[in-house]
Image (tube, rainbow, N blue to C red; front, side):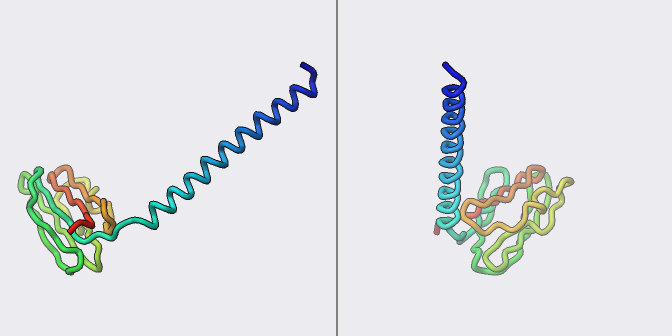
Length: 124
């Protein structure tokens, strides 16, 4: 194989790799766009402690509730403008507080030390 043929093969392989990368990026853009456009707004949040459902909160109603977690722990949940978040917690790491506001179907708030789990759902 001569130098010209080797160069042509290299260019073809490079072009094939660029085409494959472009198709992957295009698929990711369309897939991400579809996901963002078809997210369901949440209707309610189910609050569980130690795996037991302890509260169901309608996200259309502004409210604050204090949830007693496992071992006497506490989480204060706030529902406002269709969003829910943990405003205060007795756990040492406060990861649940830093998880921010959840408003979409599938959103979650988790407090491992207090064994509290909030599942945001669009189902009635």
